Length: 316
Figure 1 (cartoon, rainbow, N blue to C red):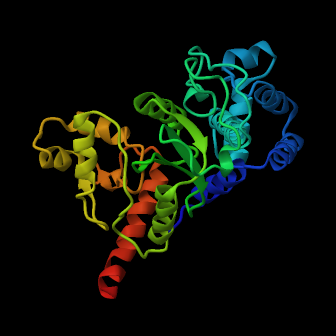
Figure 2 (cartoon, helix red, strand yellow):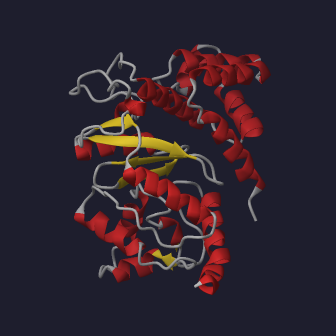
Figure 3 (cartoon, helix red, strand yellow):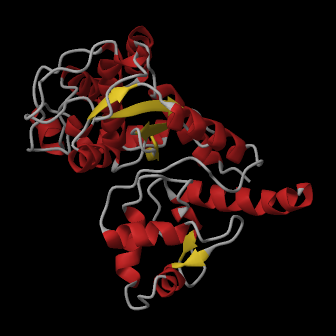
């Protein structure tokens, strides 16, 4: 059964992934209208400083109680104030990528894991984003194209190079900005809004997966990482749809039975959720362990696959 709290979170994130500037402005005006004075002031600080991470110290400096702000966001929107800030930065970054807006500053290494990996490319780049990026599907091979899609568990970003899909993450993934930054560094590429054949295929296959009609993905993948990480990620695809495994079994599968923690760490660095099914790995006690998309999503995905595995076998 779909958890009620996840329904609330998913609805919130659907609203937060707004790719039209006017709608985004209207939405945040509505948010401000329902908030108490101190929360309004905190939201205004975020809006006025879209590339900066607002700390508790900064809130206090402006006579805002961080605990009050935190409690309000948790009570009325089932999310943290920090998560709200991340989503605001991501929305603004996505809008700038869509419009090809010039980056006004390189992201600072101080204070927050910036949008270097998203809209504001590192200081070695040209300082501007490609023009008409949203409409340009025939861009050079040295870019990472990024698009968004909706799913029953909330909106996701999907990214791909000319070699294959390199990113599939829920937009509220805590490490999303870091993943985007790492991808740019590893691939020596900039991120551009757009689609290619790999992204279109991924969207089609993900839709089929959530409809219960697909259990094996065929889209090409591009997984920059260490040799060990890639070994672990390949092993994840050996876990059959509708079943689960453990970190210990995964370590044994790759011939490193004592590397349980290293295997768990490599799972955590997986940037292509669902397609590389790290959600199928649980603790040896049968309990759910960490998942970038959140444990409620992990449980939902496991239940979804259990429900549909027998149906797919009958269809064969």
